[in-house]
Length: 392
Length: 140
Image (tube, rainbow over all chains, first blue to last red; front, side, top):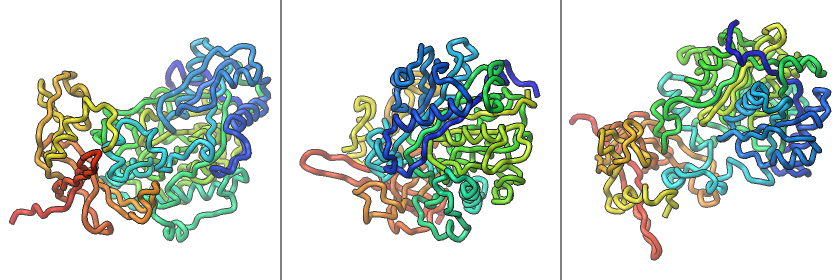
């Protein structure tokens, strides 16, 4: 393991979350949920909240960092950073926190994302189309108004090109639901998904059935990033940041679905940069959290990260391979966006940390390398590799 | 009329569609085809983008069948099929449209399609959507 100067020099030392609600279910405001998550992360780390001096987030998070700093009575706000894009920004927001620490801008940066979709609107609701930018005139009149409708055709083309069967999508969905049955906080805890139940579920937009699509929720999550040399002073075992990358390949979002590499999760260049930076091979990854906006995005994400080839996909994406503790690549082990909570990918980041620390509800034995990816099929997307102390 | 983000950039396409012509951009400097509309050529960075009429025939590059009505206007109007159509005569640029005909028809990547101009006329506005229908282009 070689890797770059970034490797292992920062760590996540605390994770925190609000209560999880179905959209519209939260009695608390979005900002209150976000405060809950930030303070829970501090408690988790054994950190005095007044030590926080920076915030990062993504997707135009409405919870203003200056209000947060004032609300928490921070002595000084030294860093506030917002990452462009949507759900692709989760890992990038952590990376930007790490970069700020390495640059000396701040010493203790909280990455947070809070969203109460019942209060502020859902992505899957076509009424929100006005927010969706400059291509709307060329897609909305034809009935493409929501992310499921924008991304289905990328997946269909990819599956067509590589002869990948729908069973692969079902296995990805079932992995999330399987792990959610072990996680009492998961919104789909107590609601297992069988092959039959999946097969009987209604189409949203082919090739996505109901269970291929993420939930939409009221919830918040936060993680705390500090320099590696500070990390051992906190309560939990540090999850060292071994690598992180962001971006997308050539003309990935060329207007009106004109990306040259159309059947893509956007990771074809971002993935190799991650592994090179961390000095890690895909085969060394012990557990994966991969953002499910839709199962087809996970399919392409994991293939683009080299966990299997397109030709191996029909054999690789089976439930036995994707579940803890002994699958070849346990996937979305807290239940993910499909079955734990839709925190826009912060749930995946928190779970990647817990796997390194050995405290997941679906723990994989002896995790050294923990992988997380944020936001397939969007740009910019991002990813990250975390490791325990033995990986340094 | 769909609201255009940058009318000065986009109007020629919509005006042509009203006259049942299909236009895309072509670079006046290097000849690169480009769609959707952009101010400059992604290949040579020239701002001399021009509009070229193209054959309204293409092939289905990908497709989807929408079942869940995400908007009140769509209730009772699903399923419907959207297609991404590649235009071989225009450098392979792609356009989104609806595939006309039986909404439950089998759709195949590679299927040959031809444009159908659907005019929307009211007292206040006149705009045209470009849909597609399958054609038989096998050699006779």
